[in-house]
Length: 255
Image 1 (cartoon, rainbow, N blue to C red):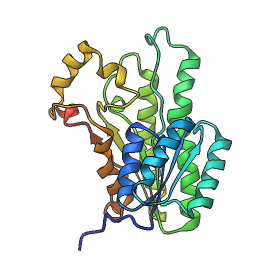
Image 2: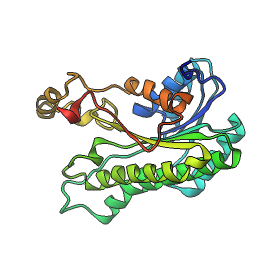
Image 3: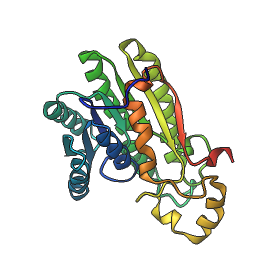
């Protein structure tokens, strides 16, 4: 008998779940029957995403949370557990892109701005979730949204790449340390996905003409392309799958 992908009774937390890849994952989780908490910093986007997710008929909680702030993460996690009862899977997806014109001109403030959200935020989120999962017992799933920038060179994005490479290393360490508690940890590596963060690049003619032909699927990825992998990683079907990096890029990296 195959493990079920039915997530009825499951509670998932998705940071940065109010748009883009995060909302795509949250939508898949809700469609599979999970109750979903989403964290984001934009109240209007939170409200819109909450209404969209609620249409699937499960419980939805949308909270404003800056994942780079330790106190806000602890408070939001406590409110999530208070409202939904538990957290079975945690998707550390919140992130920001780089804005440096070159590595030579990159300021320390710009470096720290990206690390604060992408790496510190993932650490704080995972720490809160792991503490809860270990104390509660019964296992759980930690999932981090990394990037192909972690395994390929990204000019002018050294800070972004460093956060995503660091995230993968943290995931692997968590997979080893938490295995005895039946908590697994995996990373998702998106390719070129049509989201608000990438909209500028994907709309640029020169970029599109050079990059899109290198995507074997012959299209940009969509947030909905992450619904299935999110459900799999949250479900019992992935119970023995840990410490891995799952690439979702339409074949780009192997072409």
